[in-house]
Image 1: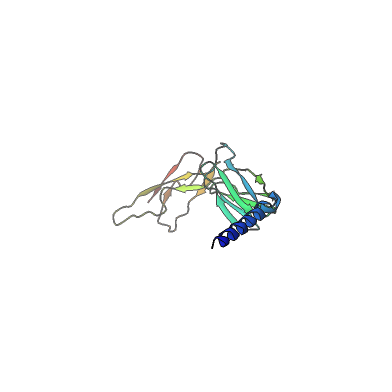
Image 2: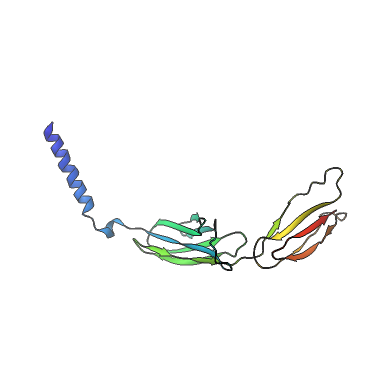
Length: 172
């Protein structure tokens, strides 16, 4: 029985020596890609930006610090696409090398994007007037034109432009 213990210990030691005698290049075959996504106007990090890496079709999102990370990628060429609501999307090519982390940052430009206080107005039985606000939660100036679904509905104003302020629309 004692001889079996010694044989098992010797076999385990041989296996351990075999694994630890490998060169680092033979063990690490993958690389990573990381970077930051920031706002072009404010240079602030963008949280929850969506990133997609092709051709592996993997996805990730940025954290509150604007950082993202794709791990354990096979060496080769990839394309990363980034998108976020109220921002222009962007894409860049990157080469992944074994045992290295490639750094690739993105700076996104804000674009006009509508924000509505209400998407449905319930007039009930007695109401004849309701209000909602339209704002620009993106960047730049957003122009809008409103078209009623019926000719007996009126909206004031029915067109306008908003940058940082909100317009209040009266619907009757």
